[in-house]
Length: 67
Image (cartoon, rainbow, N blue to C red; front, side, top):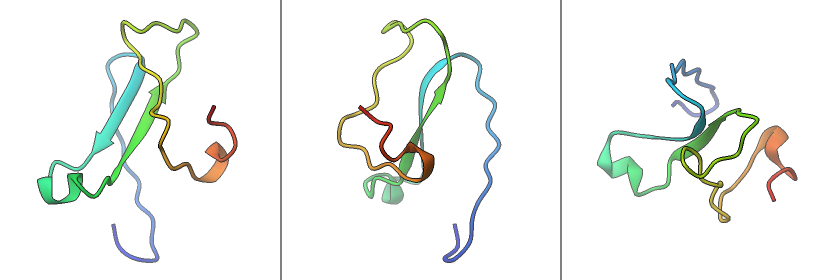
């Protein structure tokens, strides 16, 4: 990611639930450079989905919508 720019990432996900996207480069993982992506499912099940961690930082339209 370059300063003052944006990035598009296309990801194919094989099932519903919560996904954690992070860098494969260890030096960047400890910085917390990651995000959570939820593939919507009408049925909430802990078998395939955990709640978002309570200490996340939200941005954009997500501000004010996290419990």
